Length: 107
Length: 119
Image (cartoon, rainbow over all chains, first blue to last red):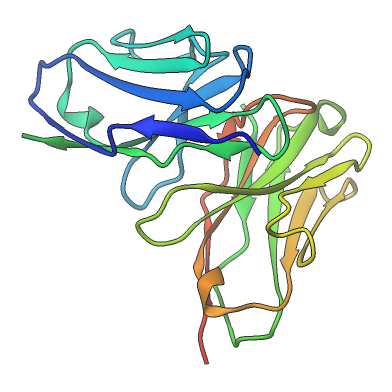
């Protein structure tokens, strides 16, 4: 199975900050990576697919990038509604695997 | 966008089975796949398996291979996931999701079905 190592596991930041979350794959996954936001008690919501393509309706402050087996989600200027948990998902090989999650909290 | 509506909460005893359904709307079944993902309280998401609604091809995580069955009923536009031999560690929220068939990410999610395993 492909392991997705996500970091950090938690992050404290302030409104207006720029933050970056990273997922590293244990082997090559091309650009077969998506990012999800999950608010408490809700289902995940896809933000980014194909490593860097913004889902329709998602604010442009969210962006994704890739370099080899390392993938990043950046939020350019945190808004109050962005405080949530974020997950990456590799869908290059079965079984699909998620990162362990990053909980973004208000400082 | 595809909408997915799941069946209601379940409480089961250890050793029992549970079956969760997921009804899809605005869904071209011949191009989509349905995934099942679970999440224990406070834990990460865990992919369980997938069915190609167009050809009934299924793939399962090896962790659940012996206990899970995913089906698709085209007449009802409904997928189901049955998990047998329940243990307390199976207590979790179970989500269905859909994405294009093949190797594609999950684009839409159901609302989740809580399953509690307790004696």
